[in-house]
Length: 457
Image 1 (cartoon, rainbow, N blue to C red):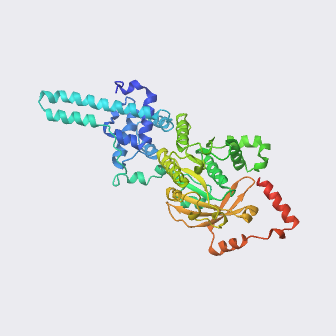
Image 2 (image 1 turned 180 degrees about the vertical axis):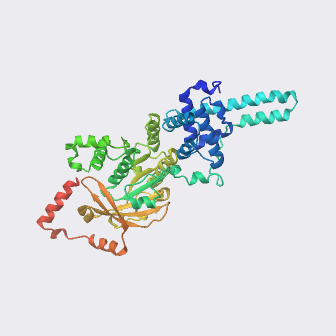
Image 3 (image 1 turned 180 degrees about the horizontal axis):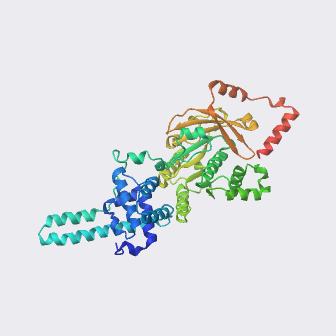
C-alpha cells in the first residue's frame, strides 16, 4: 500500500477529484469519514469544502447538496477565499468520473497511512509511560480505520437520504399523467416494461421515452436487438423534427440543425438477437462511462431477445433469468431501464391488455417496477388511436386506462390525461368488433391500401 507522503504531492487535479467524490458519492464519504482530516489539504479552499462536508455528514448522514454549499459560501466574510472556494467547487462539480475508482482507492490508502503514522507517533509517548494497553487500542483503531461501513440503510440516520429527490433521480416521460403515477418518472435502478401486440408501435414508445430524456438534457443509451441502429436513428430523427418517417431522407439539413440544439446525447447500439447477454450491455455501459460518456437512461428493445446465461428446457425459465439479470443490472449501475415485451395471441384481441396476457413468462410481471400495456386493434391502426393501461405500479396507484393517439407517420404518441370510463371502454369494444370485409366500398379499400402503405405493412 505504497502512497505519497503528502496530499500536495498528488497535485491540484487529484485533490479536485477527491473533493468531487466526497460531495457526490455518499458511499465513499461514509467509508472514509473516520480518517478524513481537512488539515491534510494545503489549499484553504479545499480545506473549507472538506470541513463543511464533514459537518454536513455528521448532522444528516449523507453528502452535502450543491445548494447547501452555495449558501454557506455566501455567508463567508473573506471575499478572496469566497471567490476561490466558488471556483474550486465549480471544478469539483463538473469533474469527470474517468478514474474515480483509482482516485478513491488512492486517497483512502493515503488517509489510512496518515492515521497509522499519527498512531505510531502517539505510541512513542505511551511507550515511555509503559501504557501498553493504550498503545494496542490506538494501533487497532488505526488499522480498522477506513474500512467498509456500508451496512445498508440506517433507518434512524438516513432520513435525509431517503427523502432527497436526487437519490432516486426520477426521469420524466413525455406524458404528465404517467409522470405523476411514477412520482416524477423512473428513477435510479427502476425497471419499466411496456406490453403490446406485434405491430402496435411498442418500439415507437421506447423512442418517445428516449427522445424526451434527450430533450431534458440527459444521455440515453438505446440498445436495439430487433431493428438496425441506423433505422432506429432515423426514427429518432423523425421524432425530433416531426417530419414523416417516409420523407426523412429528404430533410437532412433540418435534421442536422435540430440535433445541434438538443441538450442531451443519444447513443444507439445494435446487438444480434439471441446471442447477446445482459453482461454485454453492462460492459458497453461501463465502456461509455470510461470514455466520459456516462448514460442517464437505458433503453433495451427488447429484453426478451437477450440470451440467458443459464440453459433450461423451459423457455419461460430462461426469460425469467434474463429479466432478473436486467433488473439486477439496473440496480448495479443505478440507472432507469425501459423495455417492451410481447403479449400472447389472446391479448392481441383485447381492448385493455391485463397482466395475464404476458407472452413467454408471467415472472417478468413480478420483477418490473412499473408496467404499462399498449393496445391497438384494427380500427385503432386506421384511426391512429390506442389505449394505455397501467398494469403495475410500485410507486402508487395502478389499474387506470387512458386513451392515446399516435401519429404513425412520425411516431409521436400522446396519452390523454383523463381516464377512460367503463362506458367509453365498452363503446371502444363495440367499435372493434369484426366487420364483413366483403362490404368494403371501393373508396374504403383504397383508403386501407394507402394506410397500409404508410405503415409499411
